[in-house]
Amino acid sequence: MDAGRDIDTDQTCELARRCAEGDAAARDRLFAAVYDDLRQRAHRLLRQSEGATLSTTALVHETYLKLAGGRLAPQDRAHFHAIAAAAMRQVLLNAMRDRVAAKRGGGQLCVTLGAAEDVATADPDAATDLFALDAALTALAREDARLAQVVELHFFAGLGFAEIAELVALSERTVARDWRAARALLRLHMAQAQ
Image 1 (cartoon, rainbow, N blue to C red):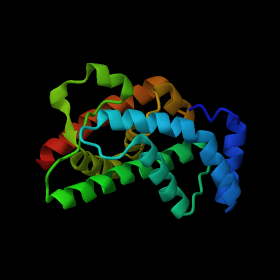
Image 2: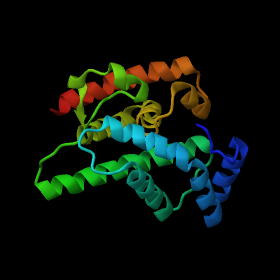
Image 3: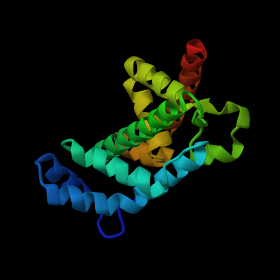
């Protein structure tokens, strides 16, 4: 990930360390540094989602509120992205739950199981319900946390395989292989849930 226009990766990690120590100013500076990047990732995620009612700005701001509401304690840049991806996922799910509750079960939000680079080649029939995806991802995390982390970083945070490989200290080939395996397992979990 580009750590921000005004600060480099080392500064991002230092800000993350200071966040873990409870420095609110560091948390705010870290968020400002990665805001544009989070905004791009949120835009891609929402573009993949049919029927999303949140705007890109709203998703980023709600994600920030979720991050700031708890004790943001990223250990490093990879951990920050994992936390942000999980928060973005929770914000989307909460917004969908609110929408479904308001409509009494109507208007399911659908997303593809591909990331940004997969959207152009994605089969339109491969759209899946966000709730089913969340349940499958939760089940996958119990079976293989690394595969679930790759999905969160690639799908929800929008990171490319090279970025994920750098963040989690794996080879790009391993990340790509993990992505393929995770997609297959997610589809299996979702099929079993139907």
